[in-house]
Length: 297
Ligand SMILES: Nc1nc2c(c(=O)[nH]1)N[C@@H](CN(C=O)c1ccc(C(=O)N[C@@H](CCC(=O)O)C(=O)O)cc1)CN2
Image 1 (cartoon, rainbow, N blue to C red):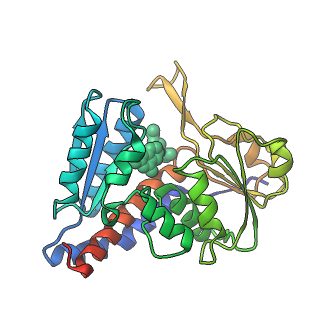
Image 2: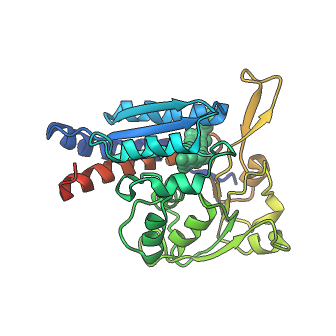
Image 3: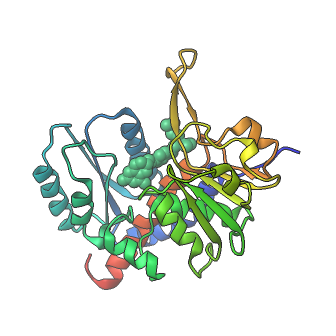
């Protein structure tokens, strides 16, 4: 039997609908939420992501402030912009698109963002609060994955989850969220990475396998047990001269063969990607509400 398709677009649309009255309430009080989106350089994938994020803001009534900086921008200039946005009352959230050019220390930039405006959830304070299970702005992709599991009827509680990939953006924070004692958590989590021996032996024991290592179609059907749930975080551009854009998108999971063996699977595109963008909107609304409740906006 074919796997259930966990449709990220539909779940994301539901969450956006839930956000709309919160945005309307803020706007009615004269304080429309605002997101600053900063892109340095002209990486085509990053450009398409930030453009989509700005469009998303527009569709639910969040203001977006867009900053496109040349590749040659210095670290000092970027830090100066972050400082300015930290002090701007109209800005509730600051997003600096990653990756940054090599001459800029991304950690230094992310640490400069006011934690109250850290809608990416990458600031050490946000990550530390998350680790402790305290209220925090959570990284968007991990938060999106947890929401997808819960809303598609695959609560990770009590399940064995294997994550392939240990990035700061996805694998590491996701491993924490899934293990926390809170809704969407309570799973037994294993993280595999480039130094893991016999990955297939480990993934084959999992109820839920999350592929997040940026390697096209790495996860194959023989690596999962029948009926496992597969979440594909990868969005890889693979050259395809026959395609309109000259490339096609493939995930980190071999979709065709896994569909025949998994009980549920996320597609690429249309899976985790739209959820990442939607959790950014969610974080921006949360940041705006919290800043107003504290009287700092
Ligand atoms: N500051 C950040 N930088 C990056 C993050 C992040 O969360 N914050 N994550 C990734 C990329 N990413 C977000 O920016 C992202 C990736 C993919 C999508 C998406 O909507 N994908 C679509 C396909 C889009 C396409 O046609 O190319 C899908 O999967 O359906 C959104 C956001 C790295 N950088």
